Length: 247
Ligand code: PEP
Image (tube, rainbow, N blue to C red; front, side, top):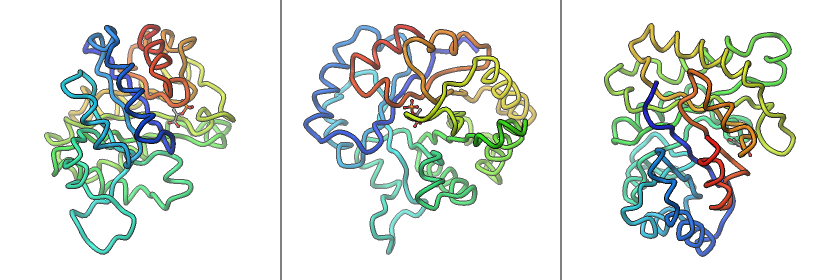
């Protein structure tokens, strides 16, 4: 793949509106943004403000999850229509934290992917193996299964807008250990082959999990890595810029 790298960050449950605006002010001054497909994924409360602050800066706006219904009696949920209303273009679906603590399943991810595509959103489908999968040599099997279930029954043409992020659960967060490039290469290679068999070889494959400026270059040098999904290292605008610089 020789398209521009997708490099983005989810802020998870961090940043007030004022903090989000300050971040965007700093980030949008960066000349590096033109090198990549940059995206930021703020909490829901900051989406509208970040959309305004971004103006026409070359940064995609993402949300951290959504419900699959357009509207309904779903207290506390956010619909795809509401995301569109806030200027969102990308929606992160299936992050391991949502799978572990917020009832996300392969079936709900599948419903959300279909709904996102129906509403013109670009789903960022997150999949990842557990430490036990890694120890058992079952990483590829687990990740392929999650992707197959996430895209089940959805036509190939509309899936062309999707992004996939491989995020090993054992590599995410403070307790995580960064994945070795050789491991990432193996998993991404298997993903590319499986997607290729379904006419989806062009889907961008991102890696996430303890990415920082020290390992970004080695990861993006891999043949089947088309981008990075970054947490902690990009929670400051300067940190995000450094990852872009290194990638
Ligand atoms: C994540 O939680 O998706 C993530 C990539 O986090 P971090 O980079 O902080 O490990």
